[in-house]
Image 1 (cartoon, helix red, strand yellow):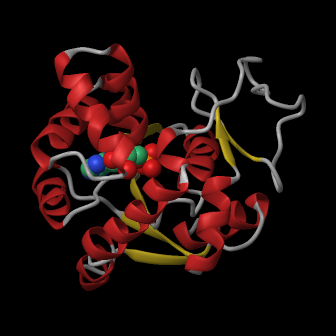
Image 2 (cartoon, helix red, strand yellow; image 1 turned 180 degrees about the horizontal axis):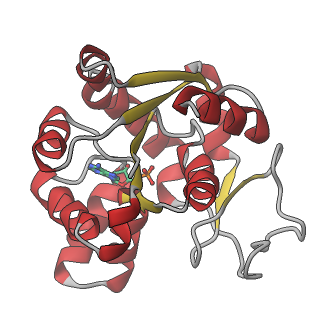
Image 3 (cartoon, protein in one colour; image 1 turned 135 degrees about the vertical axis):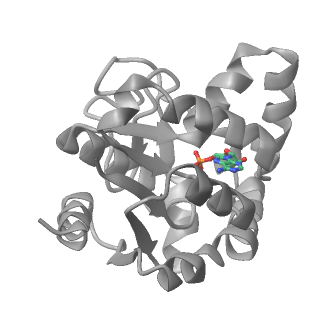
Amino acid sequence: MPRIVFLGPPGAGKGTQAKELARAFGIVHVSTGDLLRTAAREGTPLGLEVEQFLRAGQLVPDPLVLRLLEEQLVRPEAAAGYLLDGFPRTRPQAEALEALAPVDHVVYFEIPESLLVDRLTQRRSCPVCGSSYNLATNPPRVAGRCDRDGVSLIQRTDDQPEAVRTRLEVYYRQTAPLLDFYAQKGKLRRVDASADIPTVTRRIRAALGP
Ligand code: AMP
């Protein structure tokens, strides 16, 4: 029952790799970003509040994200294991997760900051299935349309330059300290994430072992 966390800056490729590997391993992919975007789209009072944080590139408050995550981990499908993508992002989240269900491996997507801004601004996403593309390196087969469901691709509001800058700052200040937290527990697996998608997939598999 593997419990895996993907940790790394925005634009490192966590979501792309998580979709692929969760399917290959037969475990659940939990993206707190996707869950929050869905909540924001529903337009409930809570969703509207969430939307403000997303748009600004700020973190959604810990109690709210923790509640969303716990709901996912108690689903029967999660019993076979899960891959957390975008969670934890703060020390209190990491501590809450350790208390709830300690993870086995934390894969750290190591990548120079200079590559991230380009990857984020070139990204286009499917609003329905969440697939993401890069206009330069991983374009859809038909321009502007999702390969999986044909829906028109969008640019996430937080992939605009100003929100991108905030997200990177937030990452370095609040999330990067988790590297030490997990290294001390012997759970950190470093992967060079600056290569193309299949190469990074192979590196992650190797880092997770047989
Ligand atoms: P992502 O899709 O992982 O890039 O997440 C998009 C946005 O969702 C982030 O910029 C945050 O606003 C919010 N978010 C996602 N995961 C978390 C989390 N674990 N804690 C707080 N906010 C989160």
